[in-house]
Image 1 (cartoon, rainbow, N blue to C red):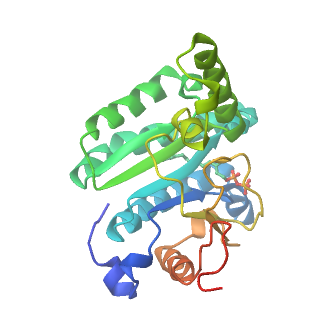
Image 2 (image 1 turned 180 degrees about the vertical axis):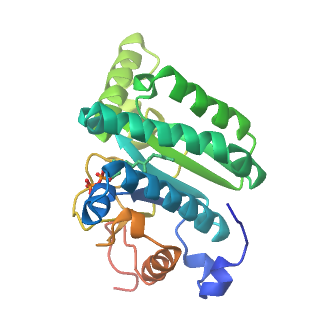
Length: 251
Ligand code: FPP
C-alpha cells in the first residue's frame, strides 16, 4: 500500500467537510466476473485489490474510520467453494497487509459473529488485530459474518439479562445505552454509506448505526471502483446538508 498525505489537497476537498466514518457495501464482484466469463472467485480477487486501494485512499484523505461489509451472515449460504475462496482471500490479505497497516497507523477491527469463522481465519484476524492494536490514525473495520438483525438481537438479549440481574435499570435504557451493546460501541456512526453495483438496499448492514448516514449508490461494480470515483463521492457528500431530522438551518 502506498500512502501519501495529499489526496485532500490534490482533489481540492475541504477537510472540514469530509466524512469521519465511511461504510461501504462492496457489491458486484460476481457480476464483474460473469461479464468477463470468469469464475466468481476472480471478481472477489479483483475486489481485494480495490479494498487495498480504498484503505489507501481513506488513509490519504485522513478519514478516521472505514468499515467494509466483507461477509454477511447470509453469505454462508453461498456454495462452499465460493465461501472457501473468500475466506482464503481474507487470510491472504491479513497475512500480506498487516505489517503495512501497522506501519501506517491503521488499527484493524472486526465486527460480526466471529465465532462462526474457521479457527485459522479467526487466528489470522486476531493476529492482525493484536499487531495493530496500538495504531490510532485510522480504524479499518471488517464486517465478517455480520448481520444487523443478529447484532440487534444479541444486544436485546444482553440488555434483558442485565435488566433482570439488576446491572441495568429499565428507566436508564436509552439510545446511548443500546449503542453500548453493539459491536460498534467504540465507533462513531457512519457519516456516509457507499454501495456499489446499483442495488438500492442496505442488506442487513449496520441497521442501527446508519440511521442518519448519507447514502450514495453507484452503478459501478466493486472491482471497477476507483479512487477517482471515491473523490467524486466525497465531493458530493461535502455539498450535502445533513439535517438529522431537524429543519434546514435558518429555515
Ligand atoms: C459482493 O459481491 C462481495 C462479497 C459478498 C464478498 C466480498 C469479499 C471479498 C472481496 C474478500 C474479503 C476480503 C477482505 C480482504 C475483506 P457479490 O459476490 O455479491 O457480487 P454479485 O452481487 O455481482 O453476485
